[in-house]
Length: 430
Image 1: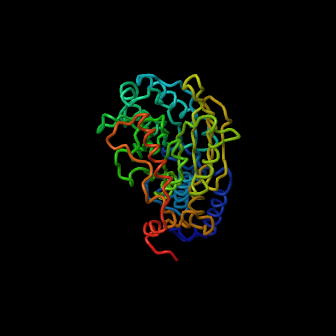
Image 2: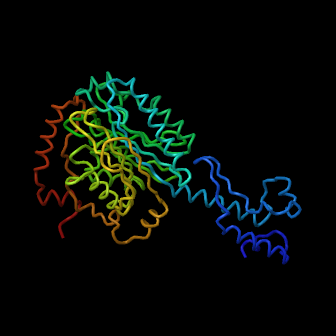
Image 3: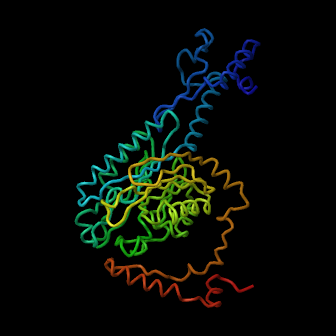
């Protein structure tokens, strides 16, 4: 009926029969959407191509771009709808690496080449089944802080961000139409010669989409600076990129033990949170601790968002005294594990579906278990008082981290008086 209503010429019985046949043909399995590379032009098989040439309009025969018939308008609308659906429904891949840690930045390039190869292999291998459009790699995939001081890290391993390695990822994203959350770099910022950051980059077909620097380094051992240490604007600490495959945020490893970090990503609009991690034994992906699974599922459920978590799969020989159990996983917005790699070292890939449309519908529909909307911010006064002090202009080292930990411990033990709590909450007791 819709096809006939939009026809430009009076519909004869023959027209009605032909349009009905064509509309039924659209519902058959053989009328499939044929996609080429992800991110490239998609085409729809012409379900009407079997019409004899004499039955086509002059506009069709001469290849003019104007849509001349109801069938063509329906076909173009179907193509547009299908492309939009495929953008919102896709698969993500959590890829774990098992490199030995480089001692010099000249070794990073070979690791980047291998990770690009893993992306292409995953993309092409799963292409007959579904579209893999988001890839995540672990923390320390490029380099780990194997030197104890900032000076040594800057001398041997630190690189600027962006850099030539990011250019390789961007070229691959453009080629395949995918997004890659890189493993972390040890970043040497241009504006400070006495700090390094632990940094990951979200690369996409259109360029760099976000740069995240770890807010909560794993102290005392990590001597990376947090943006909090250098007085960065809190509004910039947890960036969320609005992309064609959803709003993507990221936090690194130890960040996920702080519910405030992923909660901030959620309030910044994140629909998919990527965990770039090197979560070691015994807290990793095996009982009895299994903090890896515990926090990934909890953060997904409490923020109603997907979690794509890539963990290191390196052995102790490469990073003494630690070993990493892998167990990379993907979790849906209700905390269900959609896919998980078996615990154990080695390169592994897990893929699972991401349905942004379903997530948005759930966020719109729910009145119960909507913890973001139910949050009583005034009730939680502990965030109004500083606890762990920023480093400021003080050189960050292990001894300094231990001193600041002690300061934080003293601050955390100070109880707030009822009057302080009431004043900070902005109201009187009731």
